[in-house]
Length: 457
Image 1 (tube, helix red, strand yellow):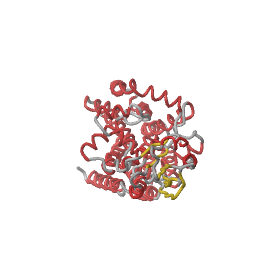
Image 2 (cartoon, helix red, strand yellow; image 1 turned 120 degrees about the horizontal axis):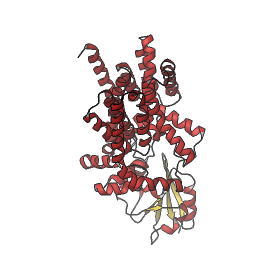
Image 3 (cartoon, one colour; image 1 turned 90 degrees about the vertical axis):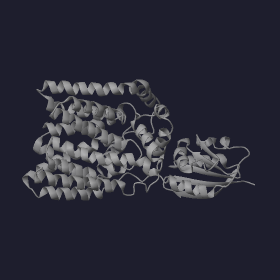
Image 4 (tube, helix red, strand yellow; image 1 turned 180 degrees about the vertical axis):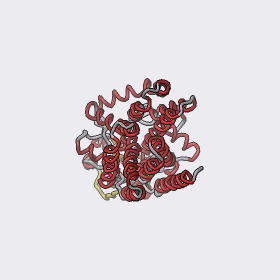
């Protein structure tokens, strides 16, 4: 190994160590939030039960299967549920380096890996027991395998590309968009190379065939149900799109830094240079697909669904940094420092609801004979994770005005009402119970309102 390669390896190890430190730091400080608790619930039980539970969801089952396997080995503590995402987040940093080297140079690979290592958005979702770290990892893995096959075709690399494509398709519903974007991005590299093009096509077909069973048994019906019944996400507006994109980049400061570098890449290289085209197609695929679905079918435009676009966005910025560094060598170190500074000072998504703290308060307050009403019913999942059956009377309430009808008999002497992300439903519950109970105390935790009601005498 030459001295330059040795130095590159040392820098890469340092970047991955930084990524690991940032993703492990305080990764169980915040409570599991609603969706994480639902993932825990769906991943509990036997493997057939995990698959059956995911059939009712809007995403493929791979993350739940990974969580099921992790729980079998590590248990179901918060750290164990989030550890797979931490590891996949770290691995994605290494994959981004490999992609940067394949597309441009070691300098570009290192800068892209560094930008991802300090990305507040990626750190946040690498600390969450959901499928978003998996989605970014799977997209980077498929891109790396596809580029490796293009560079040196072999049966082993073709098989790796096909399997990585299946992993991406099974990671999330928008994994399909990233899969298509990466395949389209390969086109300039395959021009005039018929054998490689045929191999890539075969790999893509193999990925699609591996994914076909899930499409046949679940996705078609779920997509139809979501289109017919709607979804919880607010209608897509220009403001919501800009807000999601700013969250993806980490805020105004990081976005300005990255856009400056992207502009340098586009001005110097043009959009149709193969490396720029590749990362551009990959980056745009999830954003365009999510926007199209949101405008034409049902609103789905939120930042976490776009996480597969983050690695190519940072790769494009790194290409721009590489262009600048070629003309002014000190720029590499300066842009690396600026990238770290803007990343570490960027904004993460809003903090998670404090379910752990709410559950601890209830455990301390609820006495024998009391009952806990949980509004809405889906909010029972995080409470159930932390209470683990310690409270015998926990009743999900849906809709809020049915609270009185759902009370057990005889009527409990005290009620504790739990309302997540209060939006007026707490008033409906209190009004429905006003004839029989008087409000005696309130408690607030981030994202959660708790009320103690005493029976009227």
